[in-house]
Image (cartoon, rainbow, N blue to C red; front, side):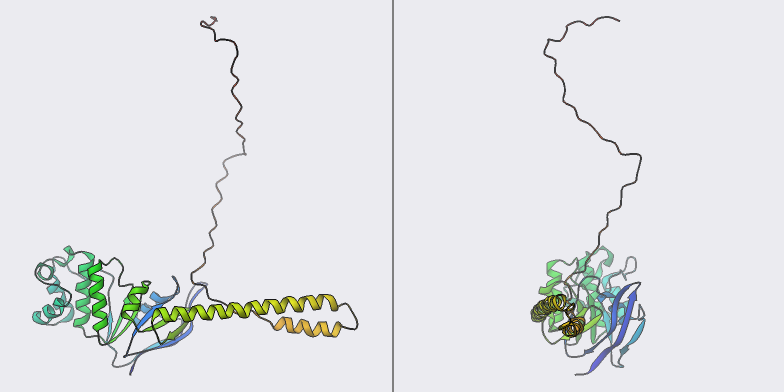
Length: 303
């Protein structure tokens, strides 16, 4: 086992939102890591920091000398009228036979390999990008929601590729089934901290639920103790014989604190805009229609 990447005391914030709060983690060359956390926690931001596209406010990310980083690009890297084979040769500087050999692992053959790559569907273009990744021979892959917009066949190929890939991966995904199929470790980003777990996503979520239930029980006991102390203080602080005991209990009360429990999803405060004021308020009165009992006249008087 060798260390490829170290995140040391990383801090990052956007305005009042703290994404990384002196977070630390180590990525080694012997595992595939599922990177999880609620939406907006900062997972994609950390990937961009690792790639050098953003800077930390504090701390550092250490790339060890043997690290060869690979990233599945989300943008379109293709030139006009370029074939998939032309792109692979240009991107990797590898000969055509080598590019064709790797492309074949993703079923890129015939017109899919030799025709204009920009005319391929999004799933087939993802296969081209995966072949390009492999041609660079990375030993750490960074994948950010790689299954988004993939057809089923391409997702199956991607899962097979990752299971047979001999090097390390760091994969951000909300697809629990995909992470279960491809990753043997879990890295969680919550409240600005990184927590490594030596198991698959389901085992981690079970552990996380147990921790939450434990903290809820601790908080319930703390609240009960608070109520007990408050009742004692209220009854005894005015009595000369028990005032000192009440002061002692008050100090105990001050020391009691509830444990913070991380939520599964971000909270959102929605404040509807007030409608513009266009004039004084008015009331619409709906009155019953008076129906005459006498028959309607067949002629009307002239003016």
